[in-house]
Length: 388
Image (cartoon, rainbow, N blue to C red; front, side):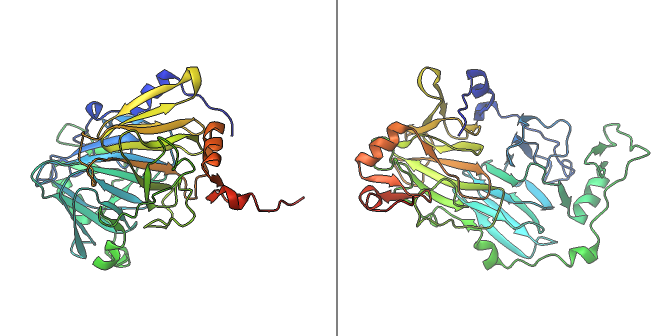
């Protein structure tokens, strides 16, 4: 793997702190529809599906996926719409009623803190904040270019009544604010009913299979080569894809391709993942606890501290380690731990490279990596014959 070192300036640019979030209140065509007019849309990595030229994007360069968030006070509605690529919600403390189907009556699911929900593509979906406070729903969307969205027919009709129209090239035209519909513009029309009738029907039990709650998480106790070493005791719960796990028995809860993998990482203070690198872009978002992420090695080390809702985008090839330094910030599912969401680009397993120091210490402790990239007993591998 080619050495890649990240500068302090680049680290700062790729660090997205919660205190620096920039909302857009007119990101979508329903921004004046009563019930939907108090939404805040955030685009951290990529523009997502925002339809507003006013949308602030923290990092625009391609990651293979988009990351954002929805901020919605109690009672606020996210109108029915359809995605062509994966859309995953990560509930960071809210209480949301999700609904799906062409008119929102095909099924419902009540989402609470800690849920991860992968909504099937090509179905209409929407949600309402039914909790006492705003809460946060993080979103991860598949692909760099996700193709935009299709709004439910009634959503478009309601928006037109408030002077809002959408062009085929994803421009939001606001006639109330003085915009004129260009002569050459082709306005989006409602999806034909015949095509709506051909969409998949998703039963509630099918939808539930694409939800991973706090109680559903299966923790891999020793996911990495460093797991038995001092400071390397983090545990991993695979939600979407196999990600970075080096345990050959570990299986994700959701296995279909998303263009990214998603997992929970948890640790107790002083523990985490020792120094490693890989070839994929990776986004780390703290859920609970304060974490130290160390990038580069030696004199070029850069340390970033992440608290709840802070995120860091780590480019491919950069050495990194992760350590929980404080478990008293935020609310983890298990007391005395911190939690982090790890999103890694790509659909396949991500093979890790460890520093020589980690490799040697792990071997001395009895663990090596086998030719397929999984943890194995050093005593067993020592008995294997090698081909000439």
